[in-house]
Length: 332
Image (cartoon, rainbow, N blue to C red; front, side, top):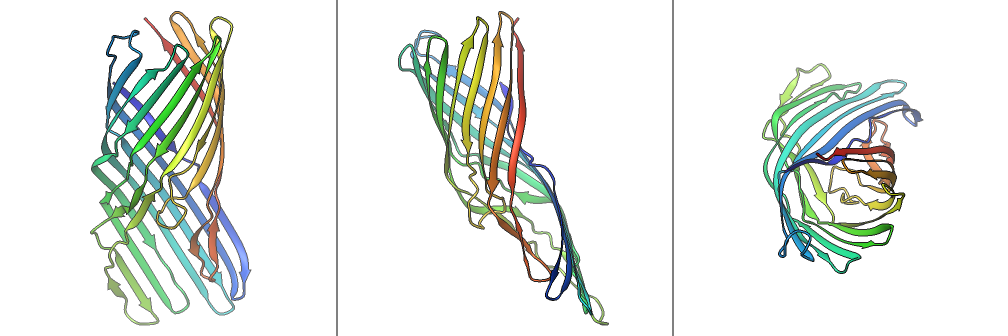
């Protein structure tokens, strides 16, 4: 039995404000966004060695898991265009907080090619979603010199779908007298464009033009879409024994995003690269490790909005991460 957090993506809050002059007047634009995507995976595993533990050159393993994926995000936008004769504003806020539950199977063999080399293969089935729900809140209020509009939407149990495609890993470990080197290739499958958020709840829209009475309507919710592209990532790591109990570790890996480069997904594509290093200590009862992981990457430029003055609001994301890694175990 195990409980792991396989995914934890929270790049930090984005806050931006711009003031610029357009041919029509002066414009002030602000934007803020925050997101948290994580996956908690309870699992149960079994293993089988045909000739017994420690004697069989080939071993098999299987895992049944229940990935629980949570996606929380907020976004706020304000836009004010002041001209010599009018004031145009756009105000919009949105928030979602949802969770999905999947079922998945993992399996594969591990084969000792020789006393110094071991190969392994892991295959992960596409996740079968058994439940998904999210809270969605949207408010908007555009206005100009002649009209005022207001939009309000809230659904406490909108439908939330999140695709977990087929995955596979292949690896090779080579052992030496004082250390070992391991290389792995990870394949992440694709998923066609699908509806991420959907709702049957209607919004309430109110519009006032000039001195006329308010007009109230109930527009439907505009569904949000996502898609997944197939990618392959590689990793290489090694360790070297220094002394009787301690080892030094070093690793490099790619973390290319499965988000497509086109507009078929609401998510932003960010390709990352990582370097890790650290030390481990193995004793008779007490064992532990400590290390650092540095990551960097950049996302695709995306148009978030067209401002009241007609200018595209482009966003470019750069990522730098530094993680402290540690582990401690005690054997009774």
